[in-house]
Amino acid sequence: MAIIKHPEQRVGVFIDTQNLYHSAKNLYHARVNFGNLLKDSVAGRRLIRARAYVVTTESGEEQGFFEALGKIGIETRTKDLQIFFGGAKKADWDVGMAVDAITMAPKLDTVILFTGDGDFIPLVEYLRTHGGCQVEVVSFGRSTSGKLKEATDHFLDLDADPRRYLMNYRGGTRRGAGTKFADDVNTTEADVQKEISTISKITGVE
Image 1 (tube, helix red, strand yellow):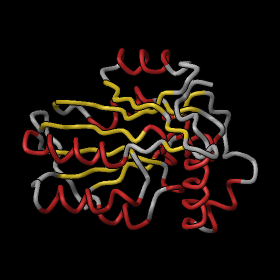
Image 2 (cartoon, helix red, strand yellow; image 1 turned 90 degrees about the vertical axis):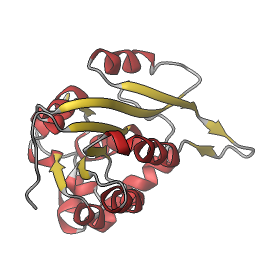
Image 3 (spheres, one colour; image 1 turned 120 degrees about the vertical axis):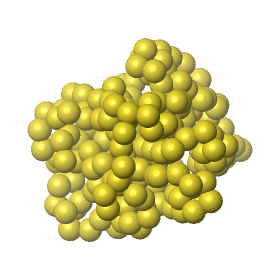
C-alpha cells in the first residue's frame, strides 16, 4: 500500500524495546541500531515524540543504554522487573505503550510502532479507524506477526538491511536460525515470544 510522507507530517514513535532486542538476538546475535531505525522510519518528517518502553533490572546496567537513547532523541519509560513468589518474572509494557499511542494520536498524523508483536493488532486497527492516523510498523520480518504486517499501512522490514539496522552484525543469521525462519514464520514468532517471556534482560547492554 502506498503511503503519504511529507515534511510537515507529525510523527510519534513507540518502541517495544523488549521485542526488538530479543528478535535481534535470536536472529543475528546482535544489537539494534536505534539511531538508524529512527532516522529511516521518520524519513525527514516532523518527529513529535519518540518513546522506548523498557524494564529496569536490579543491577542497573541498562543505564548506559538509556543515556544512549536520550542522545538520539528517544525518551524512555521504565518500570521495574516484577518477580513473583516462586521465581516467576513479569516485564510487560504492552498496555502502557498502547495507552500512550492512543492518548497522543489526536496530535499526530502518523504513529510508528517498533514491534513485531501481534498483540498490537487491535491498537493498529483502532488508530487507523478511530484515531485517523496512518500507522506504520518497524520490525524484523521473520519474527513479526503476519497479521500485524497485514493490518498496518506500511511495514519496514529490518531483515532487508541488517547491516544498517544492527550493531555487532557479522553477516548472515544466527546459526540454526536461517532455515527455521525461512520455513515457518509462525513458529519463529512463537520462539521469539517464548524467550521474551522467560528472559528478563531486555536492553542492548550485554
